[in-house]
Length: 281
Image (cartoon, rainbow, N blue to C red; front, side):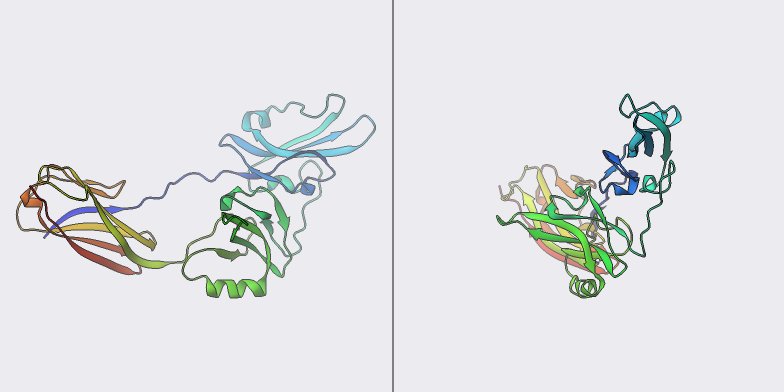
């Protein structure tokens, strides 16, 4: 028995960007802003406070380049006076007591993403709301009147969330969570591996063909997949592509005829399928 190919799907890893309140309107208080944005890698949240020539005070909030935080410049209307410019570096930090503003009172609840009409992806929503202490944040997959998939986010009663959690065992289409801004993704529940299909190209293999073999799996965590070639002879024309999960056989020969096995494994179990490939002249 020869182990031919072993690979494991790798998720993209990146630094989570900073989420800040972002409103260009003249705000009585920063927390009057219900829009958020994700800052760039070289940005922080900012709070600016201005006074107009007739004595009215207002705030602006958003993202700002770190260099501008060190050396701020006036960004209000030309006739307005900048009283304060402050930057901070944590999620929604510009909602809380910068430049003399009042801190936000969550009253035991959470700030949640709130896009009732639905967005194309779970993390596309950029408006927020304050949910009560009797509510949780929710993300839910819905369909438009023409059958297209969208993601609706907002608040949901805790009693309703209990039933959602019990029914959400196969795929994630409805999810509740209990921390601020947690409802911008819908985590899949854990599931054992399952091999759903095995494909190869070309469909009809002639000796001398270059062949690509793929074992298609599902499961959460994503399964580790191995190809086994059940053959006692020596073969040297098998090339694994770990990033794509494809086994390539160059110049398929009679030595490549025989039984193959795909084995998929994760922490919840394993699945395997055995199949035969034979070439023709």
